[in-house]
Amino acid sequence: MTVWNVWEVTRGLRERAAASGLPVIDLGQGNPTDPTPGVVRDALAAASDAPGYPPAHGTAALRDAYSAWARRRLGAEVDPDHVVATVGSKEFIATVPWLLGLSREDLVVVPELGYPTYRAGADLAGCRVLAADSLTALGPERPRLIWVNTPGNPTGQVLPAEHLAKVVAWARERDCLVLSDECYLELTAPGSRAPSILSPEVTSGDYANILAVHSLSKRSDMAGYRCGFITGDPAVTARLLRRRRDAGLIVPTPVQAAAAAALADDEYVAQVRRRYAARRSLLTAALREVGFQVDHSEAGMFVWATRDEADTATATALADRGIVVAPGGFYGPTGSRHVRLSVTVPEDELAEVGRRLGAGGG
Image (tube, rainbow, N blue to C red):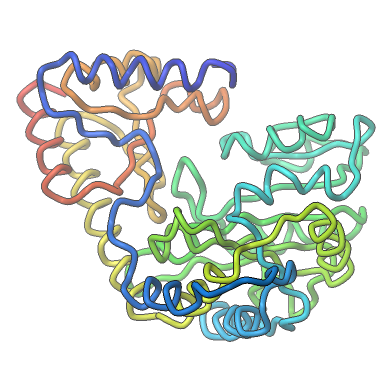
């Protein structure tokens, strides 16, 4: 399925679900629906008197809060000077090849199944793109950028530290940059952790040739605030900061204050982790009860499922029951027999999905 018709297909599925006569349950988007925590909203309001321009780098308070979070959550020592605030993670993903000056001679490697914006960002810069999970497929060619995503979208797969370490070692031998999109990093099951590319077992404290991308959209229900972060190789972050400042890619001052408050709020994130784990479990059980196979889906906010037929056939059948899902082919050709189901809706809606599937025979 080509990128240009993704939104057309999704709109058609929503229209079909609406025509079912049942209340529409939209599991097609990864859009948080739970309320933003009060501590974040209070911090935003307190900083709303902001007549001057915000720092492109990020305020010292925000970068210190991120560094403290990385130490607590990842066991990583991150110099606040090497942290850069971004206007959400999507903005950065879409612009980084351009900001780094890549062009049509340069190769960007993206996951075989992944967020379409990795490819879109490379396309905007005119780069060549290769979808590959095995770096041996590259042969002698040296890419400029390699994207990894853990926990993954759409699959919810967590990449082990050993795998990340091998990718980093491979990239360092060839002097290319590994970018790790970790916006679902904290949405693991309670008591479990997903390793980061910044984790000591991956890097031993050496951040050369790596860049981590983090976001508050999912872990703090702040998608509407648009705030994320990059950190890693000091030379790369410094270069990106200069170019981002020139381009005016800057997070508003009140949002930076709200983001600092969110980074310090570990208890809310623990609640989010429990919430999504319960929802994943509920939806997974309902799907398996009617014959779906669920693959990976151990973290994040999605369930990756198949009943061994074309993704559009599954999506259409579910739309006829008032349930909207994303066809897996949106995320790469190898996903064309899967669908992605979001668990951002409340538990009562997920329970209703189970009832509809049971009544309809799957």
